[in-house]
Image 1 (cartoon, one colour):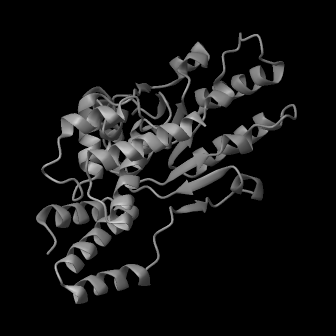
Image 2: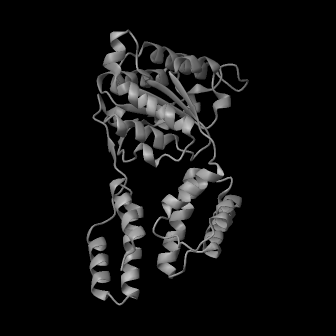
Image 3: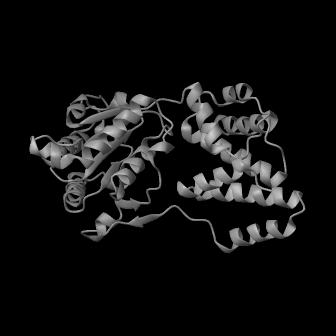
Length: 320
């Protein structure tokens, strides 16, 4: 019979919209029921899972002002809540403040104050920047749009600035949370030796659009390389949030959350947590998913040997 931990993990994964984790836990429950001789229950669970294909991450084109915008901006499903962020309290407090100010923007406006709307997220890849954008959009009940920088930046003089102009027109006309990912593509320091004149013009255009923007949208820029950003950018943002690789405690919290219902109570956390050091939040999540899949498909217990093996495979992949 399914344990209380498995049932609780199943409910949590459903409420957070984590379809992959929901299915992994449901399959584990089916395997547990089968081992207990409850073949009918096990078969019923597997039948229900197979009859409803997994949910593909929802990416859909935003209603474009013209066809060109449809290639540059995607509306993304937002399923994360603030409890999903495994980050230092300083980061969580800044996110909560952005949400709180949005919900009280009318009160702030009475005193000629504006809620934080222009946010810079900086830190290594996989540390929660995109998830933060999703959390903010979800918490303030606004759509989340991702601006595809590879579609915006072109080699033709003036064309990128024109595209940015159209995107900022969209930001003004269609309120939402707009994420400029890989922002370093246009935010590079203007004094760098390898910079060309067109890059400087693109950055100047972006700064002007940011300065003029008075929309109800929230604009979020994310970068993996804050050192390369032009310092003039920082005063254009209402909030700067820095991300780091997870601490030991954050690793433990993330592993416990991701493998809830899979980790046996007998496992020694002090022995497995060091395996994840120097990994990002996203990498740890992937390893945990791989451990759960391997346990299910190969009928292996989740123990130090299995986790160590999966971690080693991932580090080996990086080496190649």
